[in-house]
Image (cartoon, rainbow, N blue to C red; front, side, top):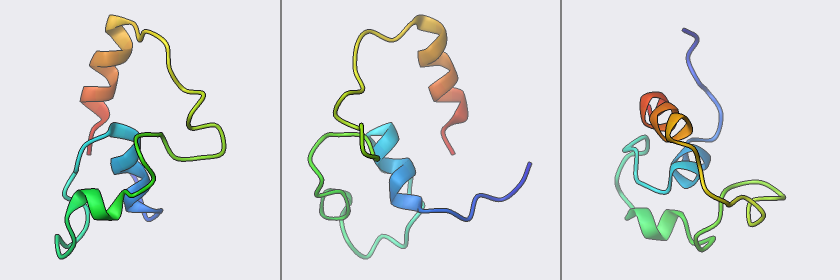
Length: 63
């Protein structure tokens, strides 16, 4: 698997939890001041009920 070299905080914001990908100098809530929305232009539109499979897949794909 290739190494991910993109924005690290974007991954943490997508998952909604601190994945410990940064140095830890600043707290997680300071790094993610953009409220509780996913990254990207349409981050607020994300929603709805996720299937059981999608929940399992998100857990599996956490870094």
